[in-house]
Figure 1: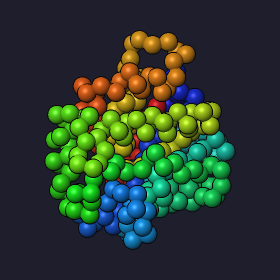
Figure 2: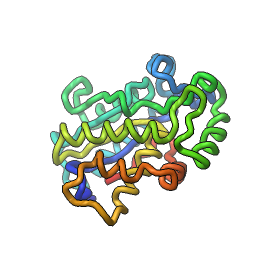
Figure 3: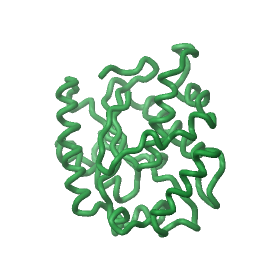
Figure 4: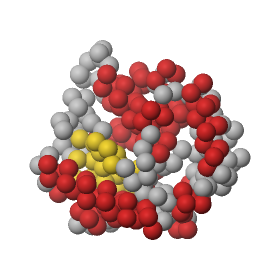
Length: 228
């Protein structure tokens, strides 16, 4: 896996393992609820996180990436923090050290107060709305473009802080779908100077025809995927 020419680092993404909200069939998307310890990983999710950590370790070896060049960037939610901690332990990285970094902009997409703690069957309604108009917000929540905007900020910050690293981004279903959507679109761009920043490149692909397709990049819980 080679670094994309417009990036300073190589990226892998990991959706958190199966969480207690997943088991209960609940939407937990607010920062207030998402950081509560009762919404961390379920037992099955802990196993998924361990397997993902072992797979990531294998991929690092296959790509000849030394441990000192690994960075784990993760959402502050309990289920993502739990997942990142398990992966760090597999790699023997100190979780409180400089190689593991919590980034608020990697948090779950907020689906709004009317859906918070409601059945996850409501996701289908949001995704249908996304496909029609990724700039339309669910009541009180974030639209696809809102998430794309803060992910672009997160990516720009990671790119400015690290160079030549293997970065594992531990986040959630919708943000990681949207993240893949914009990075894939940037990779496919034929135009643009090689000097363009990642932020300016992302701005060019934040259009309805691209953002509305984010469900094509869905991940299972605990799924690791090489990104760029």
